[in-house]
Length: 625
Ligand code: SF4
Image 1 (tube, rainbow, N blue to C red):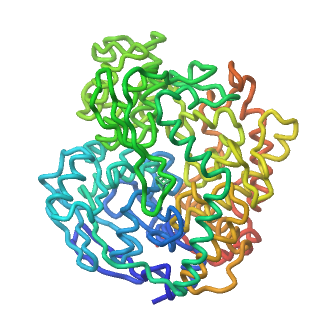
Image 2: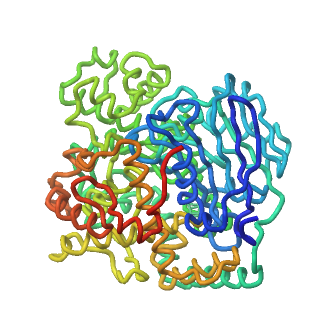
Image 3: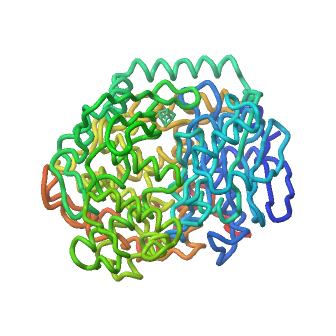
């Protein structure tokens, strides 16, 4: 046992080709302290398993599902788990997808820090983890079912639906569509880096887990006292009720217009147009919605919503909010947008690939770049939700133009000659609803070492700032000093966020609170028994992670020019609305140079200097098998 607590000390290794199951030590004490957990430890494991030329969908491509040291404990919102794998798009980046709900906590309570799956089964299977008992079971009867049906049926069949968590893929992942997600506990997707497509290639339909134990803690009394302090800090702070109210407002159709806050221009229709205020309109009818919490979560930002009227009347939508398949397809009816989003969740698809490719095709149709005949007779006029549904179905079955869209936005743009209409970062769809108004936030997504994703706290840009980093208010894109301060803020914010992503705690429990570093590090020490873990060590863990991401990227073929592989629409100035004139292009070169210099990386090659690697303790680190 590497530590006295926080970790269970055991990882599950499953080879689906040989059907071998074994338990291995999670890591040495030194490894755990360097990489902490979730995305950090997962990246370290991935770095040791890859080899040159390894493809995302080849059988050896690893799937690492991993908890943090605080997952499943008494600290608030300790529900986070991560999936780490190669990326499907921007394949030179490692990929990270985060999930919430109860799945990670139950896995930890079953005695496992995580699961590594390699190989591929010839027929559909699921993993059944019942505390220490682990079995590979036949999943033929669940193959083809949607993520909701599979979740419910599997839990019922296993005979203890209230205490079992299921993470599973839908038909989208099974059919190897681009951007397949893993859905857990009905409401939660882990999907940024297409883990569902990877599961589909391994014929892994689901993982079911029941855990009846507790997370071991080195100093339980001290840990509970810090957890309590954390909860009080959170709920005594004005940020928390505001954040909770914001989540409710986001889901309450009567306030739908507030989804687009003042001072922001909202891109719609594949970012070919902007609305000054709010794409979704308040709807008639009696809307019923209730919050759906995660493990140990009082914030409860995910909702179950009953759609009261329209073509999807009676449907229960479960999740965060309508996705790109609404306003980016010119669909502003909230009930219809939620119905379509729920269908995407059933299929287990992320908005960044298939829906983004569809909105690009719709723009091509609406600007007469594609004919109705080329679209297999579909009328793809903006807002035609029936055609959106049909196109999704054709994509799932790889029929007509759907066979192209199934490959994702980059391949679709190339095959149809629509590169100028592809809204993407490094070949991944990126609708940038919030980021487009904050060039620094967009910049953070471009330089994110895990490919386009949120690697920096949103609060630095949107609402409260990050007081523990010295930002008492969010950066203001209209402030004359914005250009000078933003690159440093992204660098500091990325270190903090990536450290926090290691812990196994939801970011809504960590953003914007004064003294949060102290609570995080004291919790970690009380859980693990480590001593002297300071704020500086936490920030160093973040910087080490950022460097390893870059080392893995270089190993996988990253080139500096890829930093500029960004849709022109994301670079150009916003043409209209409150955010008019804000543009990433204006700052990009200056910010990139400064960001690289802060990290000690070459602006020419993108590689970390020896001094940079020495600073984070990676001077002797070897990536690859
Ligand atoms: S705030 Fe939302 S994402 Fe975070 S733990 Fe709670 S329900 Fe999950």
